[in-house]
Amino acid sequence: MPHQPLNPYTPIFKGLLILSAGFVVAWQIIGKILTPSLPISEVMGVVSLLGLLVNGLCLYLLTKHKEDDINMSSVWECSRNDIAAGMAVFISAFGVWLTHSMWPDLLVGFALMILFFRSAIRVLVRSCQEYKKHTSDCC
Image (cartoon, rainbow, N blue to C red; front, side):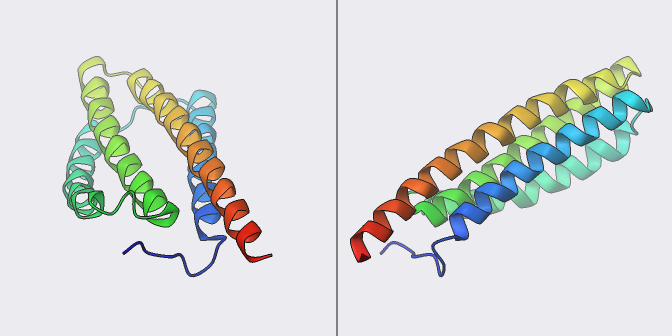
């Protein structure tokens, strides 16, 4: 049986949170360009592996529910983004370690920013469609 969100605005809020994550990453990229510094690749690698382990379990548990409704779909999308971010940070850590440069971190950050923006648009469009369908049914 599909899960119903407690509030019809919940999936829209989640989409806005994903959009906010994209803007945070964009802000970090700008900050790193304006004040360059070399990230600590070993810390990046360890933290990303721990995150991948935990987020991988969450994604596994959510996968069978991702098509239940827009709420579960948006939660699954967030978890998938967490996995992508963890893999990207690990790749970035390797690139920083290999090149002793901040540029791999910036390039991966840019790719994550694009992922977050695309994901937010997908969730927001579907949320608005579901909301309009739900409100037209009751009025």
